Amino acid sequence: MTGFNLSAILTNPDYVAMLLHGIEMTFVIAIGSWLLAMTLAILLLAIRFSPGRFGDWFVAGYVSYHRNVPTLVQLMLWYFGIFTLMPDWLTYWLAGHNAEAIFAVIGLGLCQAAYFSEDLRSGLRSVGPGQMEAARALGHGYLSAMRFVLIPQGVRNALPPLINHSVSLFKNSSLGVVIGASELTHAVKEIENLSFQTFEIYLVGTVLYLFFSLIIMAGGAYVTMRADPAWRARA
Image 1 (tube, helix red, strand yellow):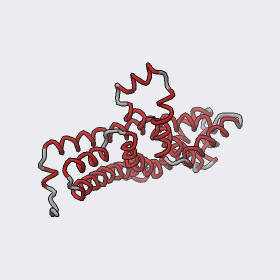
Image 2 (tube, rainbow, N blue to C red):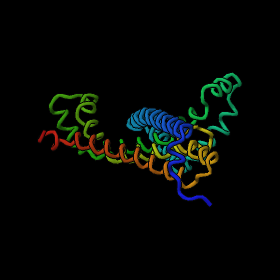
Image 3 (cartoon, rainbow, N blue to C red):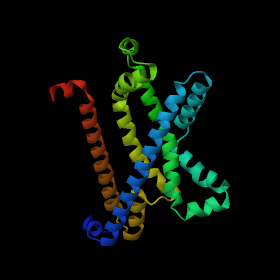
Image 4 (cartoon, helix red, strand yellow):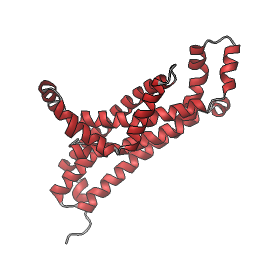
Protein backbone atom coordinates (compact mmCIF):
# COMPACT_ATOMS: atom_id res chain seq x y z
CA MET A 1 0.00 0.00 0.00
CA THR A 2 1.58 3.30 -1.09
CA GLY A 3 1.38 6.50 0.95
CA PHE A 4 0.18 9.93 -0.06
CA ASN A 5 2.32 11.17 -2.97
CA LEU A 6 0.98 14.33 -4.57
CA SER A 7 4.27 15.07 -6.30
CA ALA A 8 3.80 11.96 -8.46
CA ILE A 9 0.97 13.85 -10.14
CA LEU A 10 2.27 17.42 -10.14
CA THR A 11 5.80 16.62 -11.33
CA ASN A 12 4.77 14.38 -14.21
CA PRO A 13 4.71 16.50 -17.40
CA ASP A 14 2.26 14.18 -19.14
CA TYR A 15 -0.24 14.39 -16.29
CA VAL A 16 0.14 18.16 -16.07
CA ALA A 17 -0.46 18.45 -19.82
CA MET A 18 -3.60 16.33 -19.51
CA LEU A 19 -4.87 18.52 -16.68
CA LEU A 20 -4.20 21.71 -18.63
CA HIS A 21 -6.03 20.34 -21.66
CA GLY A 22 -8.91 19.31 -19.43
CA ILE A 23 -9.09 22.81 -17.91
CA GLU A 24 -9.05 24.33 -21.39
CA MET A 25 -11.91 22.11 -22.59
CA THR A 26 -13.86 22.77 -19.39
CA PHE A 27 -13.79 26.49 -20.11
CA VAL A 28 -14.59 25.95 -23.79
CA ILE A 29 -17.68 23.96 -22.81
CA ALA A 30 -18.66 26.30 -19.97
CA ILE A 31 -18.25 29.52 -21.97
CA GLY A 32 -19.85 28.10 -25.10
CA SER A 33 -22.86 26.78 -23.20
CA TRP A 34 -23.15 30.06 -21.23
CA LEU A 35 -23.28 32.10 -24.43
CA LEU A 36 -25.86 29.75 -25.94
CA ALA A 37 -27.91 29.77 -22.74
CA MET A 38 -27.93 33.56 -22.40
CA THR A 39 -28.83 34.06 -26.07
CA LEU A 40 -31.74 31.62 -25.80
CA ALA A 41 -32.79 33.08 -22.44
CA ILE A 42 -33.16 36.54 -23.97
CA LEU A 43 -35.12 35.05 -26.88
CA LEU A 44 -37.38 33.11 -24.49
CA LEU A 45 -37.93 36.26 -22.45
CA ALA A 46 -38.93 38.18 -25.56
CA ILE A 47 -41.36 35.41 -26.56
CA ARG A 48 -42.85 35.37 -23.07
CA PHE A 49 -43.48 39.12 -23.11
CA SER A 50 -44.94 39.06 -26.63
CA PRO A 51 -48.72 39.45 -27.13
CA GLY A 52 -50.80 36.29 -27.06
CA ARG A 53 -50.77 33.32 -24.74
CA PHE A 54 -49.16 30.79 -27.08
CA GLY A 55 -45.68 32.22 -26.48
CA ASP A 56 -46.18 32.10 -22.72
CA TRP A 57 -47.33 28.46 -22.92
CA PHE A 58 -44.39 27.53 -25.15
CA VAL A 59 -41.81 29.07 -22.80
CA ALA A 60 -43.53 27.59 -19.73
CA GLY A 61 -43.33 24.13 -21.34
CA TYR A 62 -39.68 24.65 -22.30
CA VAL A 63 -38.77 25.73 -18.77
CA SER A 64 -40.76 22.88 -17.20
CA TYR A 65 -39.04 20.24 -19.34
CA HIS A 66 -35.50 21.44 -18.67
CA ARG A 67 -36.11 21.97 -14.97
CA ASN A 68 -37.64 18.55 -14.35
CA VAL A 69 -35.46 16.30 -16.51
CA PRO A 70 -31.96 15.72 -15.05
CA THR A 71 -29.22 17.49 -16.99
CA LEU A 72 -27.29 14.22 -17.27
CA VAL A 73 -30.27 12.56 -18.98
CA GLN A 74 -30.57 15.47 -21.39
CA LEU A 75 -26.90 15.17 -22.36
CA MET A 76 -27.28 11.43 -22.92
CA LEU A 77 -30.40 12.00 -25.01
CA TRP A 78 -28.53 14.41 -27.27
CA TYR A 79 -25.39 12.30 -27.69
CA PHE A 80 -26.70 8.73 -27.62
CA GLY A 81 -30.12 9.49 -29.11
CA ILE A 82 -30.44 12.54 -31.33
CA PHE A 83 -26.87 12.23 -32.62
CA THR A 84 -27.62 8.78 -34.04
CA LEU A 85 -30.71 10.08 -35.90
CA MET A 86 -28.84 12.77 -37.79
CA PRO A 87 -27.93 12.43 -41.49
CA ASP A 88 -24.70 10.57 -42.18
CA TRP A 89 -22.90 13.61 -43.59
CA LEU A 90 -23.67 15.62 -40.44
CA THR A 91 -22.71 12.72 -38.18
CA TYR A 92 -19.34 12.37 -39.91
CA TRP A 93 -18.72 16.11 -39.72
CA LEU A 94 -19.54 16.27 -36.01
CA ALA A 95 -17.43 13.19 -35.31
CA GLY A 96 -14.47 14.93 -36.91
CA HIS A 97 -15.00 18.17 -34.98
CA ASN A 98 -15.19 17.02 -31.34
CA ALA A 99 -18.83 15.96 -31.29
CA GLU A 100 -18.65 15.24 -27.56
CA ALA A 101 -17.80 18.84 -26.69
CA ILE A 102 -20.35 20.19 -29.20
CA PHE A 103 -23.18 18.16 -27.70
CA ALA A 104 -22.06 19.06 -24.19
CA VAL A 105 -22.38 22.74 -25.16
CA ILE A 106 -25.78 22.16 -26.78
CA GLY A 107 -27.19 20.09 -23.94
CA LEU A 108 -25.93 22.33 -21.15
CA GLY A 109 -26.81 25.53 -23.02
CA LEU A 110 -30.39 24.47 -23.76
CA CYS A 111 -30.89 23.35 -20.17
CA GLN A 112 -29.36 26.44 -18.57
CA ALA A 113 -31.37 28.77 -20.84
CA ALA A 114 -34.48 27.78 -18.89
CA TYR A 115 -32.93 28.94 -15.63
CA PHE A 116 -31.46 32.12 -17.09
CA SER A 117 -34.78 33.10 -18.67
CA GLU A 118 -36.58 32.70 -15.35
CA ASP A 119 -33.87 34.73 -13.59
CA LEU A 120 -34.29 37.56 -16.11
CA ARG A 121 -38.08 37.33 -15.93
CA SER A 122 -38.01 37.55 -12.14
CA GLY A 123 -35.66 40.52 -12.35
CA LEU A 124 -37.97 42.38 -14.70
CA ARG A 125 -41.05 41.57 -12.63
CA SER A 126 -39.33 42.98 -9.55
CA VAL A 127 -39.20 46.43 -11.18
CA GLY A 128 -42.11 48.51 -9.93
CA PRO A 129 -44.87 49.41 -12.42
CA GLY A 130 -44.29 53.05 -11.61
CA GLN A 131 -40.99 52.90 -13.49
CA MET A 132 -42.77 52.32 -16.80
CA GLU A 133 -45.26 55.07 -16.04
CA ALA A 134 -42.46 57.49 -15.16
CA ALA A 135 -40.56 56.62 -18.34
CA ARG A 136 -43.65 57.16 -20.48
CA ALA A 137 -44.27 60.48 -18.74
CA LEU A 138 -40.74 61.55 -19.73
CA GLY A 139 -41.50 60.84 -23.37
CA HIS A 140 -40.16 57.31 -23.80
CA GLY A 141 -42.03 54.87 -26.02
CA TYR A 142 -42.55 51.24 -24.94
CA LEU A 143 -39.34 49.93 -26.53
CA SER A 144 -37.31 52.90 -25.37
CA ALA A 145 -38.62 52.55 -21.82
CA MET A 146 -37.79 48.84 -21.81
CA ARG A 147 -34.30 49.43 -23.18
CA PHE A 148 -33.20 52.38 -21.05
CA VAL A 149 -35.27 52.05 -17.87
CA LEU A 150 -36.77 48.63 -17.13
CA ILE A 151 -34.24 46.19 -18.60
CA PRO A 152 -31.17 47.75 -16.89
CA GLN A 153 -32.96 47.58 -13.54
CA GLY A 154 -34.26 44.09 -14.21
CA VAL A 155 -30.83 42.74 -15.17
CA ARG A 156 -29.30 44.35 -12.08
CA ASN A 157 -31.94 42.67 -9.90
CA ALA A 158 -31.32 39.35 -11.66
CA LEU A 159 -27.52 39.38 -11.22
CA PRO A 160 -27.35 37.28 -7.99
CA PRO A 161 -29.33 34.29 -9.36
CA LEU A 162 -27.63 34.63 -12.75
CA ILE A 163 -24.22 34.41 -11.09
CA ASN A 164 -25.28 31.42 -8.98
CA HIS A 165 -26.55 29.60 -12.05
CA SER A 166 -23.39 30.52 -13.98
CA VAL A 167 -21.32 28.81 -11.27
CA SER A 168 -23.65 25.82 -11.46
CA LEU A 169 -23.17 25.73 -15.23
CA PHE A 170 -19.40 25.71 -14.82
CA LYS A 171 -19.63 22.79 -12.39
CA ASN A 172 -22.12 20.94 -14.59
CA SER A 173 -19.56 20.97 -17.41
CA SER A 174 -18.14 17.94 -15.58
CA LEU A 175 -21.20 15.97 -16.74
CA GLY A 176 -19.66 16.01 -20.20
CA VAL A 177 -17.43 13.15 -19.07
CA VAL A 178 -20.42 10.80 -19.47
CA ILE A 179 -20.53 11.41 -23.23
CA GLY A 180 -16.74 11.40 -23.61
CA ALA A 181 -15.98 15.14 -23.60
CA SER A 182 -12.30 15.53 -22.71
CA GLU A 183 -12.82 18.12 -19.96
CA LEU A 184 -11.25 18.27 -16.50
CA THR A 185 -13.13 15.35 -14.94
CA HIS A 186 -12.26 13.20 -17.96
CA ALA A 187 -8.58 14.12 -17.51
CA VAL A 188 -8.77 13.26 -13.81
CA LYS A 189 -10.21 9.82 -14.55
CA GLU A 190 -7.59 9.16 -17.23
CA ILE A 191 -4.75 10.12 -14.89
CA GLU A 192 -6.20 7.90 -12.18
CA ASN A 193 -6.22 4.94 -14.58
CA LEU A 194 -2.59 5.59 -15.52
CA SER A 195 -1.11 6.47 -12.13
CA PHE A 196 -3.30 4.56 -9.63
CA GLN A 197 -2.95 7.65 -7.41
CA THR A 198 -6.70 7.83 -6.81
CA PHE A 199 -6.88 10.13 -3.79
CA GLU A 200 -4.17 12.47 -5.04
CA ILE A 201 -5.65 13.11 -8.49
CA TYR A 202 -9.20 13.51 -7.21
CA LEU A 203 -7.88 15.95 -4.62
CA VAL A 204 -6.23 17.95 -7.40
CA GLY A 205 -9.46 17.93 -9.42
CA THR A 206 -11.48 19.04 -6.39
CA VAL A 207 -9.11 21.92 -5.66
CA LEU A 208 -9.16 23.06 -9.29
CA TYR A 209 -12.96 23.10 -9.47
CA LEU A 210 -13.12 24.95 -6.14
CA PHE A 211 -10.50 27.47 -7.26
CA PHE A 212 -12.20 28.33 -10.55
CA SER A 213 -15.67 28.40 -8.98
CA LEU A 214 -14.48 30.87 -6.35
CA ILE A 215 -12.96 33.05 -9.07
CA ILE A 216 -16.28 33.10 -10.94
CA MET A 217 -18.13 33.94 -7.73
CA ALA A 218 -15.66 36.72 -6.92
CA GLY A 219 -16.03 38.15 -10.42
CA GLY A 220 -19.79 37.98 -10.10
CA ALA A 221 -19.68 39.74 -6.73
CA TYR A 222 -17.57 42.51 -8.27
CA VAL A 223 -19.99 42.94 -11.18
CA THR A 224 -22.93 43.05 -8.76
CA MET A 225 -21.19 45.66 -6.66
CA ARG A 226 -20.38 47.79 -9.72
CA ALA A 227 -24.01 47.59 -10.85
CA ASP A 228 -25.26 48.92 -7.50
CA PRO A 229 -26.30 52.59 -7.92
CA ALA A 230 -25.15 53.33 -4.35
CA TRP A 231 -21.63 52.11 -5.19
CA ARG A 232 -21.53 54.20 -8.36
CA ALA A 233 -22.67 57.25 -6.41
CA ARG A 234 -19.84 56.79 -3.90
CA ALA A 235 -17.32 56.23 -6.70
